[in-house]
Amino acid sequence: MSSTSVRTVLVTGGAGYIGSHTVLELLKAGDNVVVIDNFDNSSPKALEVVHDLAGRECVLVEGDLGDADTVEAIFAEHDIDSVIHFAGLKAVGESVEVPMKYYRTNIGSTMTLLEAMDRHEVRRLVFSSSCTVYGDPETIPINEDTPLQASSPYGRTKLFIEEMLRDVADSNPEWRFSLLRYFNPVGAHESGRLGEDPTGIPNNLMPFIMQVAVGQRAKLSVFGNDYPTRDGTNIRDYIHVVDLAEGHLKALDELETGTGCRAFNLGTGTGSTVLEVVAAAGEAVGKPIPHEIVGRRAGDVIAIWADPEKATRELGWKSTRDLNDMCRDHWRWQEQNPAGFG
Ligand code: WQD
Image (tube, rainbow, N blue to C red):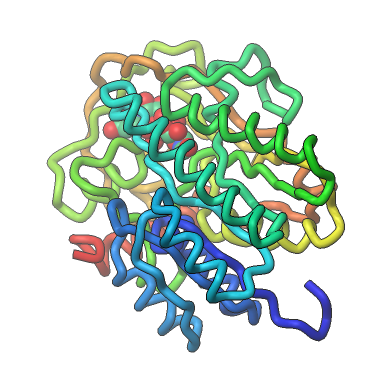
């Protein structure tokens, strides 16, 4: 960002879990922010909290990124410098049941966004990708040269969008893309007022644990303890959502000079087993998390964690919060908001 002008950033899906934490960091950094969100998987209350925490507001457009007129109006009315693109469907299991909904929504809306950007010569975008594009890797830790092999329709939408962005960047050197491959986002803003608010029964480990801790669920089912790992349960690279948000600002800043289409792993570089997370959560909550070992969940990979060196080297970013920080902050959010944003 040049020293004199204030940057205006369009954030798609900016009311979501990672989106809202990123909008907060952008507002705190002095950027102007325009958010488009259809609130399918998020609440406008998240942005009310963001405005209060930041002491300033973003422009909110309630609408669908797949609607070309809505998207065109945003670029016509605001002098957008760059885009952070979070909006999309993200439930792996659901994507298997309704793949066309995922292809239409995730890929179709990204094409609508890129076409509007092209018309208005806005050519810098940070994309919310995922470690899911690595599928079940041969070797870990994973670096960005690890072969890509998505194993669900959701993962394939992320992979196809990455390929589309690589092709667009190859077609015109003016385009600059940063593909951020998240590992397992958890945690919440330290205020306890912003956090993950999954719809229905949580698919993911940490929100389920915290709903058990707050009394909303009876106990956690641990999906298998007969894997070839140190305690028999799967290993993942859990990363604090605020570390992730900070990574987006680093990537956006780097696109002032960085060129082409480059991918970065946003992980801690440390793997934790399911039972280690359960134990750390119990410490944060102050009481053990009721759980039982059940059968394996179809599609779970045994172990996956990041080599985040490229993001450190090229973006100047490194995670700073550990698993205890993640559990402490996630619990503060859950305890203060048992029903999420309601
Ligand atoms: C983690 C571990 C489960 C719930 C997800 C998304 C993926 C990406 C990363 C976005 C596994 C175990 C879970 C439960 C359990 N996100 N588990 N009981 O599957 O690694 O990946 O986050 O792009 O797309 O799918 O995360 O939290 O579902 O599972 O034992 O009730 O916890 O078996 O080992 P996952 P998860």
